[in-house]
Image (cartoon, rainbow, N blue to C red; front, top):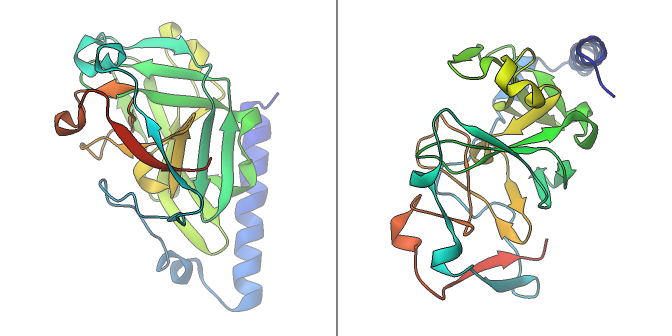
Length: 225
């Protein structure tokens, strides 16, 4: 099990290694930041699939999809049992059937993945994105994702010392779907919610995020997961 101390040591070593590598190769960290790529909220074209791997999956019946207007405030936390996957620059950063989903009024669910199910060599505490404070969960720490020389700033967040009601989120990290190449919930590819500050995962399992897509007996194009 990872602790705050082991994570601190891990990230400290990674940052020192990155600085050493940059100096040795004659590149600066600023140079590598030029290659940072953040997805637009509506961009689903990253890592496009071929016709051979593309398929269409049926959405759940409209009546069975959860409405974001039915979620509570303060947010409710539920154990996750679905297959979650986070991919960036063709590397699987996280994959799990565990963790939690946080349900908050007017937002699609955000998913918190256990540290044990995240490849932490690609995740480091952000030096650019400041911490923020949630009135319910406490102070958030933000992380950059670095795969090769590509850095996605502020692509994930966690609550290192969550409030008592949200203690279960400790030692978990949540990812912004707009700042990685792809997130998946089972066979459904995630679409970021319209408000970029929030990190909800919009899928056909939820309705009222993009009302124009709430169609009965509809299917959605996806790739083999």
